[in-house]
Length: 222
Image (cartoon, rainbow, N blue to C red; front, side, top):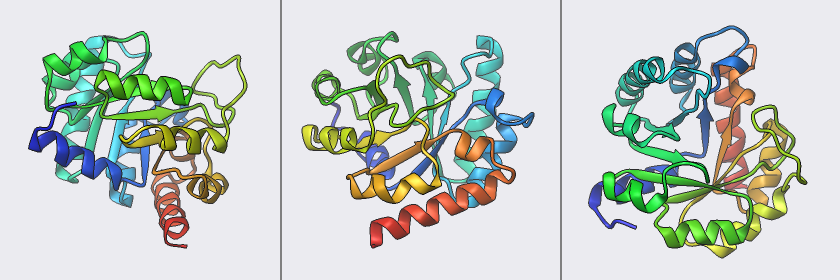
């Protein structure tokens, strides 16, 4: 993993993000991703992952430029899902790679300062991602979720503890996480929590984001 000052600064900001938004316009009750992100940023969210799997690449690139502009204005990190080239083109802070995407090593060579996240479903997969140069790992799905097809058992909070004990890099978790889950996840060692519909499908996305951040901070301080 790169030791550049830019990369180290990005990782430190990620560690303190608390709760972050992963976008999904099909799960936003008819609202645009841009409007959801704007509301979340206004509420205090400081990490946004752009994840729009149904958009054509040209439209995704245009949206990524728009999201980058408002995240930069809010001093928020922006991570692009799957696509290293788009992340580089819009000067995002990072890219999140699934197991079928560009290998971590190749992404690191292309963009040595980028935060590079990797998906993991077990402590062994997380450790492998760390050894290959990932900046952080995302563990999930923790609970049943509409954002991912999954035929195995959902991982539950115990997986969070297992992964955080196995690796030295930051660990984020996601998958069906709602407000009532947060205290238990924090108690299990959750460092950073990612949500989709807890914000995107809420009647008031900004209020939902604000409440999620508050409950997370109270759980950490308690």
